[in-house]
Length: 484
View 1 (cartoon, rainbow, N blue to C red):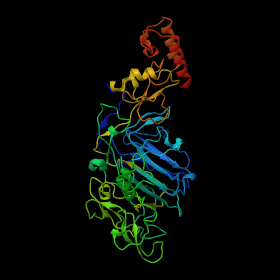
View 2 (view 1 turned 90 degrees about the vertical axis):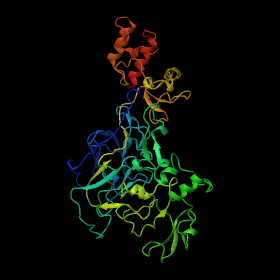
View 3 (view 1 turned 60 degrees about the horizontal axis):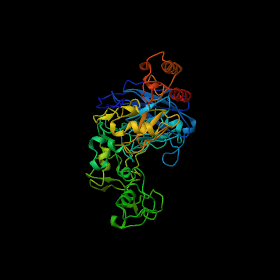
């Protein structure tokens, strides 16, 4: 039996049309985070220069629910990509969490094992879809993009709300002005993800052996070759992973980009020999090598690969599976996503309120629901609970463990991230099995030790299972109570 293990569920369509439009604080911005599914609980994540908290005082997003985040002044004018604390939002999927102890383990979007990513000042781990922002970046405009550069877990839509200008008042005809929608309702990149770009649940440390496998996320070209860590900057081009990383993540040597060329063959990393537009920096028009995106099924329709005519990007190259997932594959699900490192899919608007919808229109791909952290003793036998419990018995104030299949050693006292399955220990005197010990539970344990009540009033008091409660077990319970 897999105690408290979240289930894989299919999701129907949810609509955000009846949601209220949040009222921003005067002179500030406000963001509404929406769960676009009808039967999947998510955890939201936010990162920026300072900590924020939703008005609802929780990061849990119930099916069809929403959270409201007031954007502080410190979050303004922080350009995405160039500012280390640039604001971003994302959905955490497949989470087991304990809000009160600020500990969480998620399949995607995890932030160092913490429940409150913003307070911990930790961003979500790739691959996950990210909404990146620069609030009030000049003239009262805000800039944003939906980044799929590292990969996609759930689709994302960003919608301006309330009153905003129909056209850019400073640059009429701006094709990036207040564009919406960003994603195809009900579409999920995981459904069309090539086999070699799928991140399977069974590849994650959080996966409980014996539970149902599936696709947790779909890597982008860049994301695949820098997961779980990017190659060293001085890696040799003879290493296929290194070469692909340089090619798809725009990490070729500095001498490559901007190098003059006549044809694409003059460029060393699959770049485009591109006619630099006259209005770009660098003087008169000249052909140079430039990083670019790639298609697997050219030509890409303009309503799929949007803004192909933009002079800030070179023409797409062509690639083929299994070495590549086309940017056209990504854009069929999210036409306005930022799918490769220099993709010019950044949008602007003078709205004060915005809505970010995770999985707009729902998803048909089986996805792990959020839930409680499972008990260590309820994990399958392959984890060797009895042995691990004995080896970890001397660890003080252990509440959570990181379970690993035998004969690997468990993480005995987890307070954040773990490479094993996050689980809660059976704590001495935790009669209610809620990973905490209250005074009334200690009283029950003492009454058992004195023979005044039967052991079944608090089975957790008898840690070693010998039918009695010792002084050591009561002391252990007291220590747990003090740390709760």
